[in-house]
Image (spheres, rainbow, N blue to C red):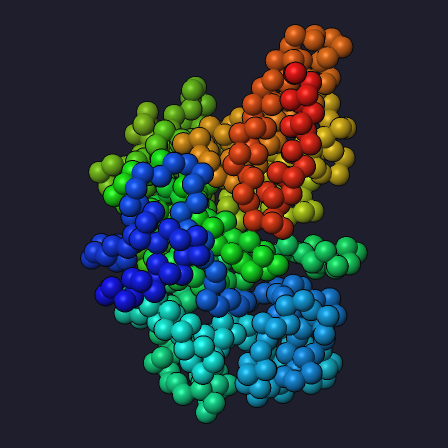
Length: 519
């Protein structure tokens, strides 16, 4: 990486930290990565970046608009290319440029079912759009094209992945047919761009449109897109990261803000996580190998008890059957990666059996992230899998994390309607999740949200207790105030339009009321 390339990357940081707060390094182990050029405190902004390009992910369950990416109950056709759009009113229609429209028009006859005249989801190649938008930069934005080509495609690694090239070739041919001869390219270049996208894009979940009808369940579904950033793509991964990113909404131009979540010393690498940190090592490693082609060797991944969190610890199946008390722990063997071993009865269990079990549980608990899931359903899943997993296991924490918000926001469980017992349940759940976050994800939006939920539980408990035990009530109110201050400190800079931003707005009123009470 020469000095000219460094300057181009530094200049992409509109916050001005490039070459001052952070610098670029490169070696054979990590490739290019960011280091701190000075001591950094938690909460500090490290850089701000905007996407070079963004587009849909590879597939969806419903027809989406190709400009705002929202689910469409009644899709309209773009007047130029016939691809699905919201209509002329879509606020992001400029995403779909006239050059793109002219190219996509070549595929207009393949988009619909000839018998029904309706869009055929399987015939809409959403996966091709991001690559086409990148290729268009060759003709329309040479500066952006130059920046895109600074991104490492790791193409040789992808080609060695079983069947990867064979699976990608049909899409590459589709794109070549679509963009030729207007854009001068070839299969090799298109495959290289695939590598860039797989290696360097970031996913973003978009909430349902506020204008959508709430009567249609499709409109309650979030949609995912992917964006490519120049500076952000230089960062390495850790399962105990030193920084966390926040990506704003489409309305906020998908602004990428990176903040430190723990102290970073001068010369230390700045890392983020490429995967969900609530998941146990065995599932994170599978995800990283499938999506990024590497095995993480961070301190958490090489520790069987995951830095004392027990995020991956199971209860021993053999000890459970014999009703042994207390139930012992099933952990990865330090001597043999292919087995897990009980720390009491020494029973061996194959790695593949544990992986299969946890994958099944992960799939089973996905329901808790859907808006239709009830408190009762989530509690039932928590009870079911608590029989097999350690109390600190990441998959249980996923359920607990959702329940922290469901107690207080779900139908029939609004905060003002909760009993003291239910409020105490909310408190316990929040405290369980915070034990993990304090170690793995301090000063993150996730911690800010749980601190807010815990504050809500305590302030409501305090109000209940005021007529019965004023001293105890005020203790809870003071604790609530402390948690709320810390929550708002974390969430105050969240991107506008996000759930976290809205929480912080509402929390300021409660903060003022509590502070006024204790004056």
